[in-house]
Length: 292
Image (cartoon, rainbow, N blue to C red; front, top):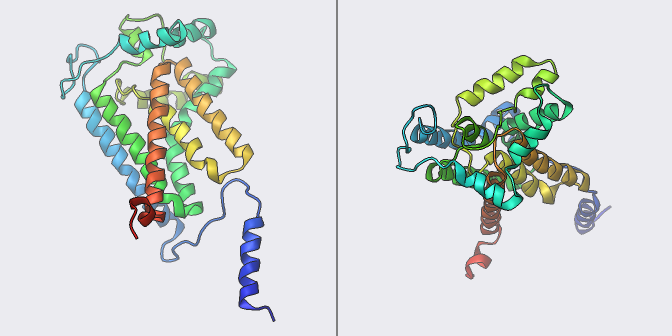
């Protein structure tokens, strides 16, 4: 008969020896709720992001559009040339203008297809990872919510304090070189014009001056940074490649400047830092505050 001590030792040893592959095994779930109910519970805190974004859109409307006001409802004026000049200072030119000047000819190419696919993943990345963390990394769920909400709310606050025209809008106003908003173009190459039209419809109803920082870029990096300790080497490479692909896509399609991307990465790092602080507070409250 195996003793309890031996059984416990075997369990610990087998767990420690298990290879890490992708996401860690799922913790026990609450049997009182089915998977759909659990998913809705997991997603519910994300509604705070939607509310904050809608408030920001009300504050900024109709700044930067047509003959709209010169300032938003908080008195902040539209910034058009600042981000463009920052890109020129960093890289010697506005990358969006340079890339489109060399790569865009009115017809969709393979790289437009890749850009369209990468761009649209932004709208499912946060909900998808929220579900993965809820079902597979439940002990880190509080940290994930802290990271997502911190990054998103900080970014949305940036839209209010510094409303900035993205490259496509600055070009439309005649303030920089020729740029078209082409994040939908690749769908034509796939023969899925209807999806491209839906993307354009969604963009037409979005906040046109929510550019600095880029939460598209921030979300991609946040996913990589947060999941990094819990996934395999192959998954890490894919996550890093995704973050870089999103950054390049945003610049090429005229959605964001390079400085917008860098600012988005910064708020992602802040979000992960806040999550780690919360995790440490949860695990070691006495050690953190120096109490017994």
